[in-house]
Image 1 (cartoon, rainbow, N blue to C red):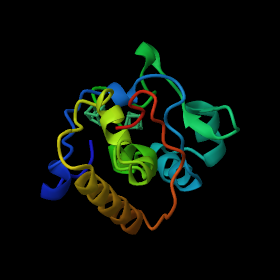
Image 2: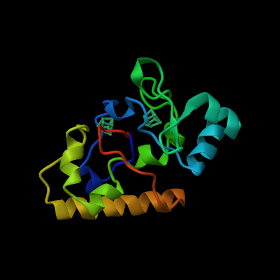
Image 3: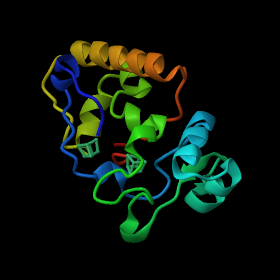
Image 4: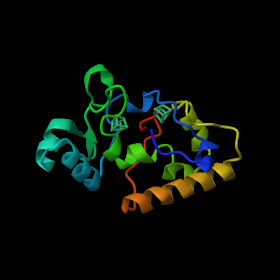
Length: 154
Ligand code: SF4
Ligand code: SF4
């Protein structure tokens, strides 16, 4: 569900299983996400928030869950792929792995695209590089809180 390259593929290749698009409360959205997705679906910010979002504990908006317990934007795959939230685009290259590389193996239990077995120093290096690429591509430094319980991101 995200652009691949040889380095990142050494540790991750999305199987498009959709597991990370399942369940409530996993997909936090930044202000920039709200702007991009609202534009994409042709709604004002307010209409987008009231139509497609819920407020999670802590007061941050998350994408709502639709029929079947999946993200409201999940059809056969992500229907807002070009503008999907930063969190979805980033997964599984998240700060929690840079800070504690052993999280990679925990996350693999919920995301079949994550490959384990590589030295964790390699994992940490790749994750750091992928995070920097994402920030450069989006011009949006910083990240929302990643979820480690379940695979909340695709
Ligand atoms: S759980 Fe992992 S492999 Fe499955 S769609 Fe999400 S990122 Fe891809
Ligand atoms: S990748 Fe798309 S369908 Fe999946 S959780 Fe993110 S926005 Fe929803």
